[in-house]
Figure 1 (cartoon, rainbow, N blue to C red):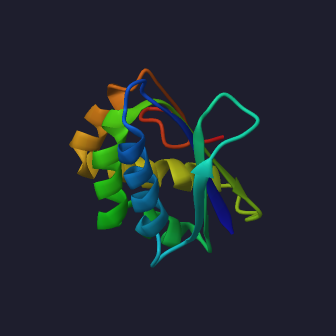
Figure 2 (tube, one colour):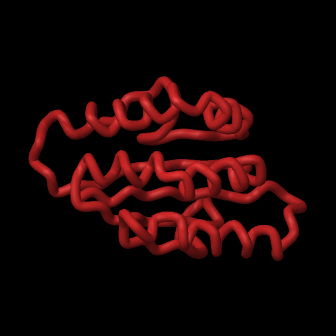
Figure 3 (cartoon, rainbow, N blue to C red):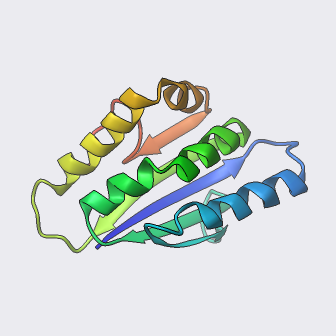
Length: 135
């Protein structure tokens, strides 16, 4: 199992109705591939967070590249100030970190507009950061 986790903070001045619509869209984006929870983040430096549970690396790649996921990224990333992602797994494959990195690299290679959106964030780090390697 892979738990893909994200945490983010919305830019100041974004209307609550817009934030609510993005959170609602995030809740629906992984319906075919993952069990997900999206909502407010407590106990840290971020306002919102999400955890998506997928069975394996193939399902992870399907989730990350689904049209619904990409649409939410295109809609939501311009509203985000700070973003972090990380992955937790019970998979014993010593190459899984490299496989996760490769999924994100293929995703960025296929969607340069997403890379541009990510590059415009004040802070973007973690397993999904362009040019970074999962550990």
